[in-house]
Length: 413
Image (cartoon, rainbow, N blue to C red; front, side, top):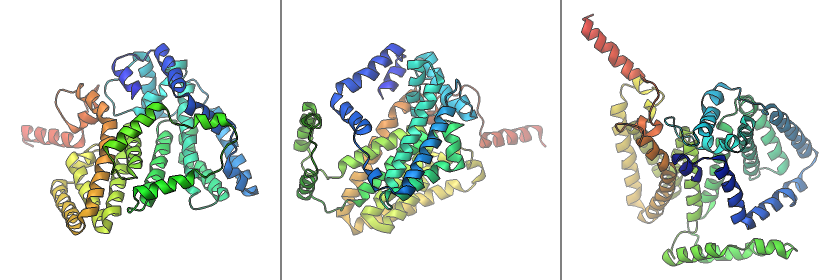
């Protein structure tokens, strides 16, 4: 978000960005050193449990990744979408040293523009997106390890990376899909952690669980022990939150993190709103079972029709009964939710809290883009809120149909 603020003020100068890149790791030097230790020194525990299948698969996957990394070392993108939109936005941000008017939300293009801002190289921008895709593979491996051992998890990761579309997006048309995949896998892991928590967990059980975790094997270097301690301001914030909200649920931090990552993902690509629907229906299933699940799913379907989401790709023209269906879906979905709420009001409170936290933080993450787009349009519309101003006239199928009918009526044919 700091890049967004600087971009809105037209202050994305290379020198200033270099200062920020160096300043944040220096201010958070403890976590920076611990991160470097984990990446460069600490052995990977999964490798200890690998046999010949896992090791061979890992070597093949690493060889494949290196080939793709060499291939993307080029002075310009090759894919049409990357050349005309995603990487082009990063290049324009470098040219303007600020945000580009119009277009849908482009969180990742703004982040990847550091390749141009810092090095003036398209290859670095492509490498940033490529690196996020590798993080997505790590997240997939971690997710698969919850059901299978390290060897089969490595095989699953390699098979996924060998899929033609995934491989194409990794070396040919390098855009935002692979970085988005990383954030979506993170959401899947975090939401699974949240669902796994028992709703009856209280503060005493949480404290006892933390004491058990502290009994893990300690490192022999006292230097790393000191780095693992929280900063003074972190202790102050935790103390302030604990005093103001003593009865907060223990899983609230997971919901906050889910909301932040989900909001960022929607800012990367609008189709991530489908993941928001998935998470909201999952929350409904946790507090209300199947009745609340279907109620929320049907209600969100009606709400998407009311918001005109189906009109973005031009599907509204082919759905002539959408206006009638949207109100029917809203009524049926709301009815099922109210029915379940009347049956179990105690768990309803927990469900509402989860809705508010996830939805509120997601909205908070994309609100800056809404404000930017609102300053670019003359009148309010859903399309203008999502895309800002357009550089050329854009006609959807409904407008073309109306123009055709007007011409028919005018000519009398």
